[in-house]
Length: 365
Ligand code: SF4
Ligand code: SF4
Image (cartoon, rainbow, N blue to C red; front, side, top):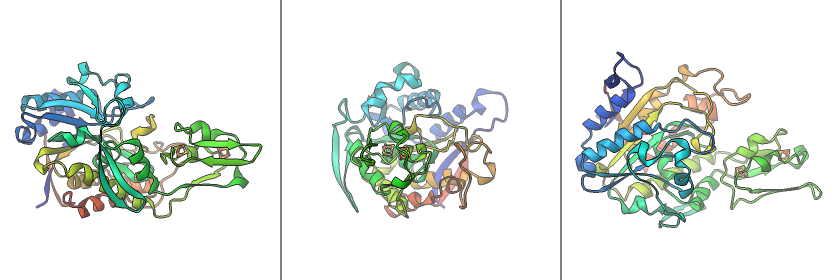
């Protein structure tokens, strides 16, 4: 017997609202002891509020269903995101107090400065600065949109916590674990496309001096410049360091979640619009696989394992990769897409004592 993971399929058995995914979410929430989880307390619902022209983050209707369930259980819901800038732009992506049914607040305040510092102690990752709201609250609902990720292949519940609950400096430190960026001057034609693709303005090009410098303090290792370069002059010097990135994410997740009693946590993974890259890119690309549904569990390790297990390689939709990208070798579809084993983070989460990879899947119809 493993940890309980509830599953609601996107498949609809009859044309009625209760048989659709939001209806199944309502019934799954009815199986969780929400009063024990949240009654009488503020309940942060941590999610990604979208960015740029992306349109594949969690639909506000699902957020509303959770907000209503929390309120019915005696909790005081508040939707939260890691940075004030994302909260300020939330309405552009359909998230308002009117649509989600509760306040939307920045977990670190207006200046992203309300943080609690904790020791990380892993290679160059010395300390994590966790947004204060996540360390002031007594319970947490971790609502994640499942998608691919350039560095760890998979972004779900762990990524929503590790990258979304810490300040930008900490995110950079976690990203720095994946290695740096190498520049091959012989292949560079100084076109400037890499600098134009960099939203952190981290790249300085001086054609006269035939130089290109990357300020790794500002760099968030998103790989946009690498992909923008027509001559393949830029490359991530990753080696196996993507493993360190996933370890860094697991450590951060532990640092955030150890504050909460296990029964006061709930993780929900929405498996719709599973795209190649994470929502931080501010774009939406075609779905890699048909929509699957959602999982929910109080065990973050079990939900990540179950979610990855539900993404089947044979369901890959041709034409859903960006540009001329092709599937490579690998056991899991997301490993074929990104060349990295997505289970490293799940294994690390379990090693850090956050739960069990063994799970019992209960489908809710
Ligand atoms: S995009 Fe590539 S070729 Fe163009 S300046 Fe940057 S590194 Fe050089
Ligand atoms: S990896 Fe991203 S942040 Fe870093 S230099 Fe390239 S585009 Fe800029």
